Amino acid sequence: MQTISIRNPDMAWPIAADIRFPPGFDAGRPYPAIVSVHPIGSCKDQTSGAVYGEGLAKAGFVVVAFDASFQGASGGQPRLVENPAQRVADISHVIDHLVTLPYVDADRIGVIGICGGGAYAICATKTDRRIKAVTSITGVNFGRLMREGFSGYDPLGALDAMAQQRTAEMRGGAPRVDNLLPPSPEEARKRGQTERDIYEATEYYRTPRGEAAGGATSMLYSHAAAALAWDAFAFAEVLLDRPLLVVVGEKVGAFGAYRDGMEIYGRARSRQKELLVLPDWSHYDLYDKPEPVAQAMAKAVPFFRTHLGAGG
Image 1: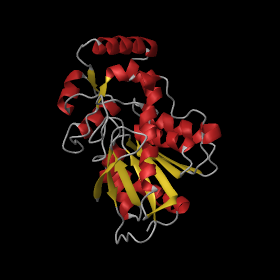
Image 2 (image 1 turned 45 degrees about the vertical axis):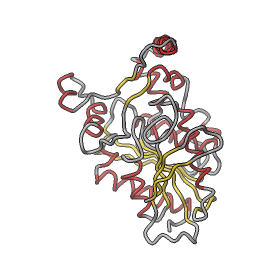
Image 3 (image 1 turned 180 degrees about the vertical axis):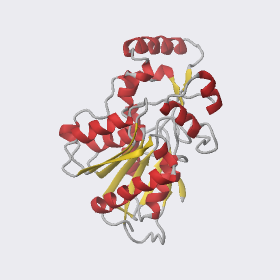
Image 4 (image 1 turned 30 degrees about the vertical axis):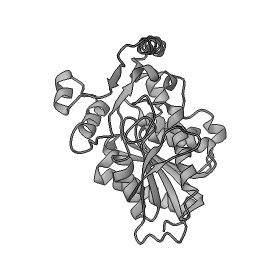
């Protein structure tokens, strides 16, 4: 693995990324490459890199997992901004770097994303024609989630509060940083926050199982307004024609991955699209639990080999 800093003339800050190489890597030959996109509040050291990135590299692909702008080890100020437009732009900036590498075949680039990263990957594929195939692992449309559960089903009220907070901060007030999860599973139980997705997210992000320094699971409230007007799936019937693989768990949670997966599978223009529903597993099981991850990879690897050419 090689850790790099991607500098792009379109950006005033670098993107931190890890490149994982296939077994027997030979820099003198071209490889298919995959960009791996992390969940909301996550980082490249968690599921996008350590699980799916590692697995796809072992299957013969060059894989780049990166930290979103304003998050993890990447640059950008203010910190902890979750801006969907920037998250999608980051994918193209990473591809800008990939196409300069002599060992990457620029005509064989795919993208995979987990949770919010799955929807960002789909959104990027609609407009960046360098992406030849896309896989969404338990993908969540962050705009839809913000308009619903993350705003208490009061999007206009949330926008008013965000506007007031942003004005207060510009006048010298303290920034409001919302932590999206309880501090521990024990605290979640005490608070009665036992809904499947919230509790299982806490089990992943707030225990040694998945916690990482860059995975803050926090969001700067004053800069969250753009997400409420964003839709990952807009114009999918017209623009999303690349081969698509959607993987979801059948155990439904409040963040809506099952619902979003069914929606994009139905709406995508893609003639070559596949849907994998795992009956016994939930959203966060697909982050790192060996059995559901193995089932997802058993679909994703041949999918990418078919549409990008055999790995390695």
